[in-house]
Each structure stands twice: as structure tokens, then as C-alpha cells.
Length: 62
View 1: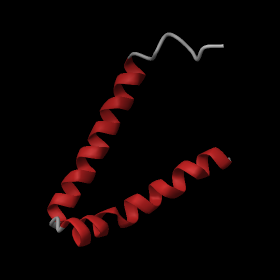
View 2: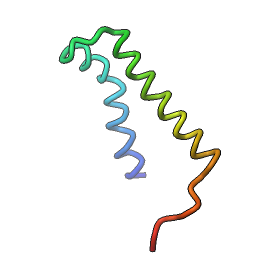
View 3: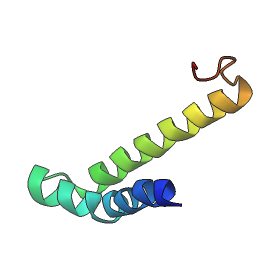
View 4: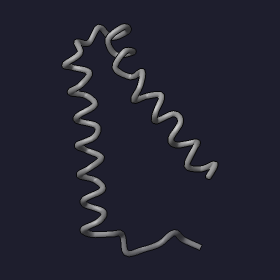
């Protein structure tokens, strides 16, 4: 449970305030920030799809 929360809480924070941060500090437009989030999610989805179609054969050592 703690492992899941240590991942989910920062991830939710980045999703919530990442676009605002990109607009304020890097002077990105709303569309550019949305495009960056879209690229992130598309890459994540493709990676998960690749791992589901061809899972790694070796486990962790030890």
C-alpha cells in the first residue's frame, strides 16, 4: 500500500500542476503543455502494450 501511494501522490501532483508550471515558468502555451502530456501518455501506453504483447522472459536475479 505504501509503495503504491509513494508513486500515486507525486504522479497526481505532476498531472495536476504540471501544465500550470509549464505555462508559468517555461512560458508554454496551453496547447504545448497538452501536447507534452499527450506525448507522455502515448509513450506510456505504447510501452505497456509492448510489454503485454512480449513480456520479459527473465525475472529479477537472485
